[in-house]
Image (cartoon, rainbow, N blue to C red; front, side, top):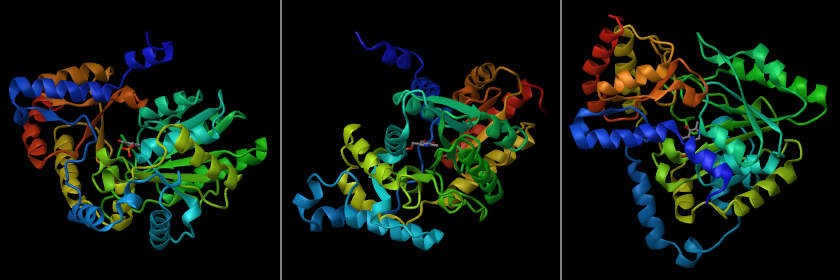
Length: 396
Ligand code: PLP
């Protein structure tokens, strides 16, 4: 007999994963080339060649006892120092080894920081639409997640609602930039407004409110759009980063947290996060891939590949009459469902072997998400199916 809480979680298990399983089932029936699976954010671009070379060099040249042994819960010091210096060079910050904790991907980092700062019953806000796993991460620490609604024309946060929703029990706000599922990049102006509201509310309630910036898509921004570095705008910011998308390493589970020295209760938060990393059972981020991350932290994935997919798919969907904001980052399109209940639309799409995810999984019904981190053939070959779907709904 499993726990009641787990039973509930299993019952509500991810719609995205369910779609992914469905894709595998359909591929067996129709052949993989005839199923257009836009359900999961699993990069289709291989990791840069430098990653493979780094693995070979590290395994063959480094001291195996050092490489495979236990270490500080925060991770290797030289790795953290290299990453801190890289961030400083790129974003004009001043971090050092004691501002970086290596984590088991962004998911590990988010769970670590929530474990560190959230008491049962504390409220955590995020901006809809949002990565659905935040519900589980906040639930893990018995906090309450509430989503600030967006302005639907732009998918920017509704600032008035945001201000209203910050209450004395609000402990943290999670922001994801560039955003999964909309592909929107929150510009500096939006970040400044968020920071201003948070500063005002901290003073009003006489407490710290932490801003957690979840940034696995930081490097995936198109057409030169700038993704602001949030610690520069709000001192109580914690950055959660991941190499899952930027180096195409989601299975290797590597990322880091940035905990700036100037934040309130810095020492407690940093120490707490080290302990959380240990007691959540991660102990430390995997050692080999930490060393690879340090060597490759300035390498780039093939952004042009995603950009081309984005242009082809966005252009075609607009031409077929679908309504969608132009994504500037990440690798997702968030499309308005032509019918109110987007589950009906997802089911209709499936009849054309198109696998897309319902917006309610991201706290935003009436929309669907397409992950375009797929092969070029999938994008190109799916277009007639999207066209047929548009015809079915009288969009063309
Ligand atoms: N945050 C967002 C917004 C994501 O989209 C994802 C993965 O898709 C994650 C966190 C988790 O990333 P990781 O694989 O690094 O744990």
